[in-house]
Image (cartoon, rainbow, N blue to C red; front, side):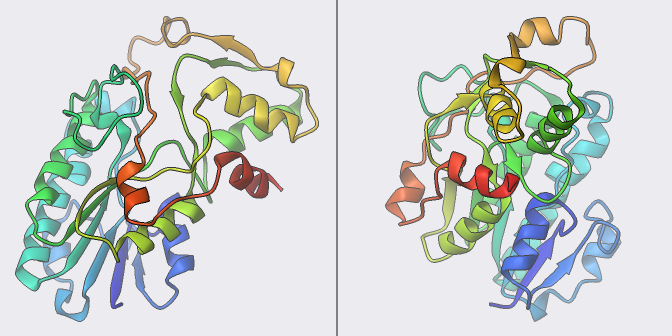
Amino acid sequence: MRAIILGAGGQLGRALTRALPEATALTRAELDLADPAALAAVDWAAYDTVLNAAAYTKVDQAEQERRAAWAVNATAPAALARLAAAHDLRLVHVSTEYVFDGTHEGPIPESAEVAPLSAYGASKAAGDAAVSVTPRHWIVRPTWVIGDGANFARTMRTLAERGVSPTVVADQIGRPTLAADLAAGILALLDAAPGTYHLTNGGEPVSWADVARFVFERSGRAGTDVADTTTAEYFADKPAAAPRPLNSVLDLTEAEKAGVTLPDWRESLETYLS
């Protein structure tokens, strides 16, 4: 594989770089996807696979910075799709469950209609649509990514160590996805047919509060030190916050049919925390 990894400074980008040490790995500082001239200057003929892990992920800030979110999450993937088609490249694009509104009953399949609630979700949905017209595309949707960098698990570990007892939302349900597992799963999906795949760690779906309790208990604190709240209550005094989907549980059947499954999130998160 002659691969180029975009967004190599993020949690997934770092995991992909470790999984593919021979690949060209570019951070935002090295290649700003929002800069058309920078994209045009890349020697795309040197590669056969583009792994796009770059994204504008500041969900709340995107409500005020819609142009910035759109440039990275929608316009840039559209440019990559054109380049992939022109150079016959495999294009892997990482998406999010925020393209859905979270009202689907049960696990959300790839065929569910997109209905983003936020500017961030809308920009990601537009990026998915642009990439989907490229013949050799793999759109991969994970949830609740945890890797090398700032993330929810690290925040909870810090709060546990500082003796803080947080209040965490208990009505948003999903599964954590460990970046190292996700990177391995993405590379395995390249042996499957092009298309859209939902890919998270396995195991029973849980709330953010449940994940927080899991981290607390493995940090020497009691799970009861984490209190529950609702999304509406948590954001009641945060009018600038973006709306969140309550159901983030993705149906993993298509990836499983392709022979790609990730470990139980509890097993992988325990390893991560240790």
